[in-house]
Image 1 (cartoon, rainbow, N blue to C red):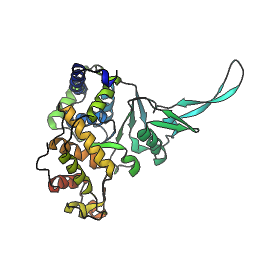
Image 2 (cartoon, one colour):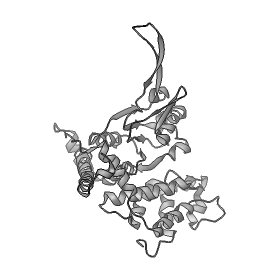
Image 3 (cartoon, rainbow, N blue to C red):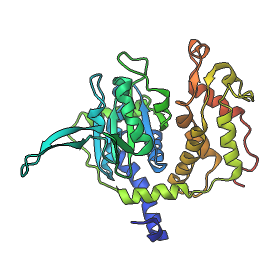
Length: 339
């Protein structure tokens, strides 16, 4: 299905299925609406998503349930301390031609050759294995033995990690963190949601999820996301936010909390992510133009892993979310954001 072959009705049908996806995941996941929405935003923007939260918050179930609503290939890798790079990207195996008797090496593709890869507890494995995903995430290809192997399209890495303060975790390298479009924090459920979780999970009923979106429709929606309008005023606002995160630039940040607590700020990739995710949020809301609220909604998930706190922030228990909140308050908003 090519984008130019779509008519307006087909586009509207694809958009209506997005809400259907949220409803399907809601059959299994109680609450966490913002988290599910942020996952879809990430997929629409064509990026990778990192979910962080303590064990037992259904991070893995959330990703696998989302994958079941999409007509896409899905693989899961459980990251452990003894996992090797070849366990992810693949390796060469020695085969024999039964007719001629000749022996030759053949590349055996690893689980990364899929549409959706669930990298479960990605920070439970050492950096050597974590780095095996870098090329796949950025270039959508894998190099092995001097040859490049293209990954299927669309391709997403949806990873989960435990808080880095927990024992047996290896913090992801900054370069790999930056490859994730969004870092989504999964919090504890509310009291009413927890009651519903207990009711659903301790009985005999089980939900069956239906496949809603095809791979072709997802590719179309990704292209449509990039076509969403954003005004010059809002692009300028995004630029101001990103530049205000930096303390090592010639211009002093306009946010005092940044100057006080940030060791280094976000790079240009953060601005690209803010614009793309804002467009995806607008499309998910049924609009074809970005608003100020769209930017504010995605700002936390886009920026929180692209800013490094200094020792003073850690000593005073200041989080990146605290700094982002101050940023969104201090950075001057455009007078006419929709112009």
